[in-house]
Length: 560
Image 1 (cartoon, helix red, strand yellow):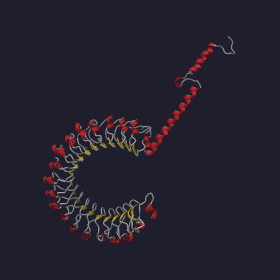
Image 2: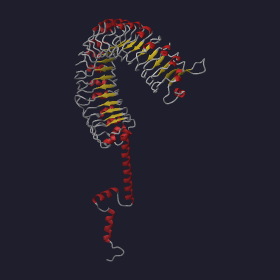
Image 3: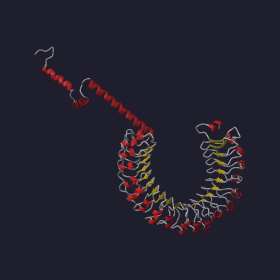
Image 4: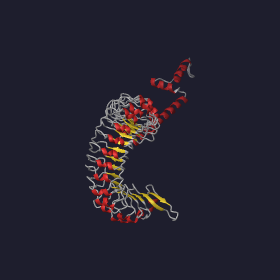
């Protein structure tokens, strides 16, 4: 790599420099050489002795050169998503290194002793590095670690030496093979974040109550039948995700967690909303697939709620309590049995995303049209009743960016779609559409138009005027204009076909105008009369008049 690449070029490295008033030359402290398809670390980078932060992620680098030791001031090094199979001992000489990311590399087991030499490390990420066990040397020697990322490996336990990580604040163990919650973590009193999602854990020990600094606990997709009462002692707890476990309830003692803002309970057999949930000032609440038939009356107290997922339950109506949640921005009611929305639904003035897919609506719910902030609407009916039309009043949703109305029985679309200036995605797959409204070409923000599996035979001739359109799908339509074979070639072929057809029509119109003008100038009658005469196979009115005159008067060479 030349020095020019460091300083300029389309794929140049991002370089941040500071000017030292004591020194005349600029010094480079930061370089971003990620996503450059590098197979080796450029020598020019290794010569930057003042470098403090270096990003080399998502390349094809296979080894780290010995000259890495020249970067004495390096504090942050990202080498994730490369092809490293080992680490050179010289890397261990970087005494200032505080952050190291080696994730997503096919490492051999020989690398731990090099990492153990980096005594100043505060953040170490080793996601998906095929670890079978956490090296004891890391636990014994790295006493300043605050973040340890070990997700997506094959760990079945943690070594007892992990108790030496007294400064550890965050540990990520998602997608490992843990069957028992690591008891050793319960003595690390500075822990703020624990992530053990997607393991096989059967229980969380009561000792977790010792972690009084714990703020976030992620334990989704495990096998937990209950939660420990002692969790209430984690008084700073703000986020608790125990979705997709075997819970039937949560301990009443957790009502004392007054800092709680987010809880995930999806995929548990609750059947009722836990009473204490309505006492928290929650911002996010996940209750997907929890066997709910109704909501508590106290649910309306969740006035701070911004995100609510109630999909895949047994709700046969939209609970009116939801209409009291004035700060709600995301609401998922998909896959219930709802057939009507309450008249107060329009009071959700801040709602931006609404999911109603897979319910029992027999007509398009007009209560939606009062949601002026709505940006995404999902009302595809892959199960249950089917919609047959979308009202023209949808034009009231001027903020709408994405509309998903797939899997219905729509035969036409409203012209109003052309008057929605922010519409970017329109999903009409699996309907009964026979044609598109010509007004669709006025929706100039449209980027995706999904029309698979309909009854379309023609496209609007000016559809190529949608200059922002990047995705157009037409599979499983009986297309004639353009023909199926043209549609199969993709957008560019479709646009070329439409342009060519349009040019032919323009040329035909010009020829007709020229011919009509010629006929009129020659005095052969008006164009409309000429066309009528040609259809009847008769001569023109002027010729007919001439013949009558010939009968009444003899020619010059004739005698009476």
